Length: 135
Image 1 (tube, rainbow, N blue to C red):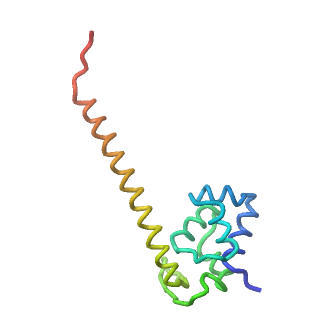
Image 2: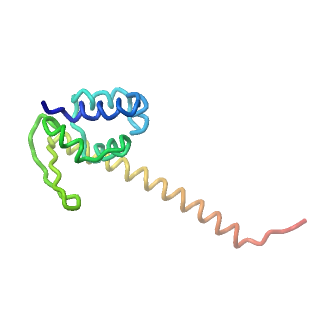
Image 3: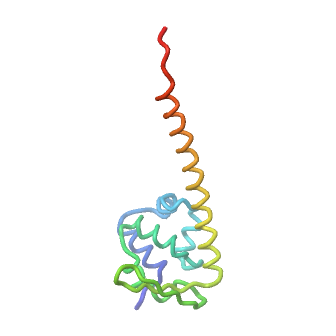
């Protein structure tokens, strides 16, 4: 019997001894939202699957091998290549919209971090150039 994506994620999480709450924190999401992933109550964006795999120390291939039964209830297949391996994801329009929103939020966060680093860099450069007055 094939396992769903949610069942497979739950299996790997439990094998590592990680609680749902800890896993949700690692993924920067709510416990309720993460629980829906394990219960297969929501479509899981590809980028979120990558983060889950990183948190679990596994690969997308491991998840796909046992979870191909249920990535989405609506069937729109997307085929991509990672190295020599073809990866099949099934996305609904809702999953693609969620994926898009997730990536936009991450871009905004990264842009904010870049601005902060630029400010710090500017201050450091200013400090190195400005002669220090001794009393």
